[in-house]
Length: 288
Ligand SMILES: O=C(O)C(=O)C[C@]1(C(=O)O)C=C[C@@H](O)C=C1
Image 1 (cartoon, rainbow, N blue to C red):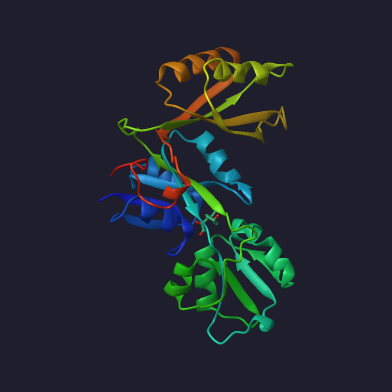
Image 2 (cartoon, helix red, strand yellow):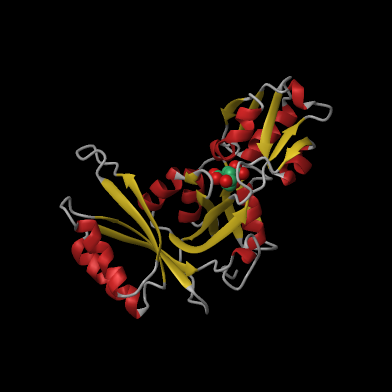
């Protein structure tokens, strides 16, 4: 039975993503992303499940930064539909509420709801942690944004459900492992990080190789590099269809290696190919 580390507390969306992908495994919440990455790096856990991006609120910067700093492989992706609930101790009325606590992503995904009800938003480490904190230390006027599972786990009342600003609110997670997994059947995706020389046309040239090989890029993200001598010089995170060892992708990666000043392949993993598979164990998710 696999042991999976996620960031947060029992009832977190990351826990749900872990258990739906690896049914029957043990998923344990750790307080920080740093701890999840180290626990997988030092072999304490076989896999880590971390959020990378959300369709409403964008990328999770810390995950992207840590992917660069550690040598873990990305061996899977999970896409989970996230339905947020407004939770409060039983007996609380909507009109009593003044403040709401949740993970910054949870707050960002419910920004419109929070504004509509004129609530003061306060960030905490994770959504389920907010629910637990509220259940253990209820304060007048305080609510939490978390999952239905968190409400059940911590005995809170659901005052409103589906409060995210967009009903199509999906979070994408990466499955991290110290070892790469054996190749399976089905479509793959690959994630890479690279930097280019600071000259006109360098990014275009780096990406041209993918176009030349007929490879579909599914993501391109730019982040400021953490270099004190070159603040704001960008580092690029790209995902593309295919396995790094396939003929087309390996050719494109070779060109990228020649053009770029730095390249790191984060991993090739079975792609979540259909939105119908969201949050479900499918043939595209890693086997344990
Ligand atoms: O706090 C949680 O429940 C998490 O699993 C973290 C997290 C995130 O960091 O994006 C995961 C999914 C949701 O988008 C909101 C929060």
